[in-house]
Image (tube, helix red, strand yellow):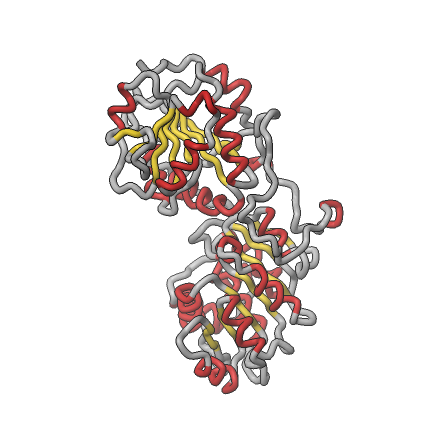
Length: 430
């Protein structure tokens, strides 16, 4: 029970049980006492594991009543929909009407939200850019903040909102910092390092039940798109293994770019499904690719509508992961016991959150492959924003936020060695 395990007050226990939450989830059992105790914390877990409810209960336990002239909790979320959802969850669980919640997000007029803050707020739920904008207009008082919370932090990083997060955090003299995310990666660590002090890291891994048999597969974690291209070229050099390969990217324009950047000896052996440019080598149907023995690689854009028949294709490579996880899952599910396709996925830090969603949905973790020793790892992409929100800090100065990877997440799948030998036993496309 909530009161026995987590020492919640009777009012909160009543409201949370009325809302249908009868027992604490794993992340709540592991982290609520730390939150109530005022410790900095990073909560890592998949969608639906209870992260939002966790910090809402923590905020309501710490604030208790609302009498201050300025907000005491600032919660940053990625977009308007999340602001509304979190505000509604507060309204569901908060039975203490002296505690006032104000929502801040982009609207045609900013004055109404500034007036709401002036009328009094104990908890502010906001998007980082709108909170920063109102703060700079002197409409958001941060002098009384005791809890600074960033939810869906991996999405905030993906949106490039690190700068307003850091400016707001640095404008608060001293408070508790809580970060909730589906995945903890280097870009996120870079954002939070300046304002987090020796945080506890609470990680839960709740995958769903396996719903279907899927292809054997591995995941390559790389730093940027250019390294993806280098890795693709390196793998495809082995013509004995990669006899027929489908490469998925997000757009037809990217497909054209990929083909243009293949090694010279591969360009004549590759094609695009429904190419964007008339002069590009391509096919209208995947069956034409299967029948052409001299063409080894077919590049397909995720933006093309409809499913693709991948039977008799030995390898599929997701160079880019589609935004809709259902599209990815459909491609990796075995249709029959005879299917021997091997699936390979390339993912940058930003894409790891989507990988986690896929793992949760299929009930399987993707084995992480070691990067080949002869892979050329490129520096940041040229189009990467040169103005970083936070300068890089040497590894040796990092605190507990930069922890050793769990054994289950370490790179222990060397595709280029034992797996390669295993792949030679696969039937070549004929």
